[in-house]
Length: 457
Image 1: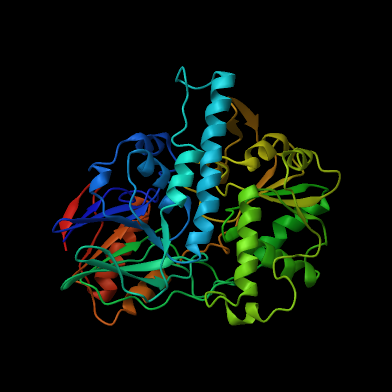
Image 2: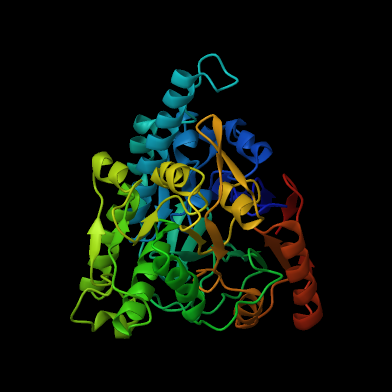
């Protein structure tokens, strides 16, 4: 069995791993590249092998950098099954439809306003491609050995990152390979933590926070800048990932407002994708999904309502939020301000000093969110520049990724060590730091693979 790293090697985005065993080929994750232009251009590069040679795809979870390239794979001719957990099969369609809408919208806007370098800008994929990809999703129960190709079987294990996220174990005869996907935190406020690592011959582990540790959860770090902004009559704009981050933020705001640590102000959720995801998360709570923490499942009230929750469903409702009549909190996607409704909110609200832009998670290099964290005084959007005069604050407490200590603890939980541990899905310093700790503290052979490198398992 061989493994080739076609993404998330030397970068924190674009997860794609190609397994070949005899005549069978399996792609683990099919993510879109995000961030700097050099990375985004890779989304246009054809798949390096004929997609009709792929027997199947298995995806760890429904974030864009793990499923977002599926419609492009379909456009190139892939028509096989895409295996995933049951909740991923409900969340991934929301992500893919939204991505296709943004692709088409951005292409139309670039064409109409003439700021694209292409005479006829085209989307990477369209709604028809997304619907075809959604039609290929095949839900698999956790801990079930699913044959996905001749001689290849996969088993999904809860990863605790977002609803439906999975650790993937691939078995090929006497050989086995594990993928952490994006690994969750043991102290996630909504989801049960990741289950123990499987015993495999080789392990592929993410390293988003491979050189950092999270501070102990302290909602005061979230509350303090929000209080300042509301006290000066400002609006709090939170670019929030639609999947999981919005739900966790709503739970945190509910806790803070109930305790009187934040004033009770309207909380708007303005993202069609976030609204759709919120419905799925509410369903998971109602159905007592085992991924949800038991104490949340026993709530008699909606854990996602801070008290004055308002859902902006239409474009007209969204446009009115560009000039709110009173202090409020506005959650809108995307989480790194790369697209979606949050961009037009930033265009209108970032120039006002009394406002706050709160960034509650990891920001990939090359995104507007990262530029804001790095102190940018202007942002480029819609073909021009917007001044940034609002306060900017970053809060890492709400990250859904395990930190370096959490990753080490999870790897150590494996019943037996792998022969090799491949460290991926991190910026180079983070991956290198985690690999060094794995070598030093666990005594394992740890490697940071190169892009397109192929290894034997």
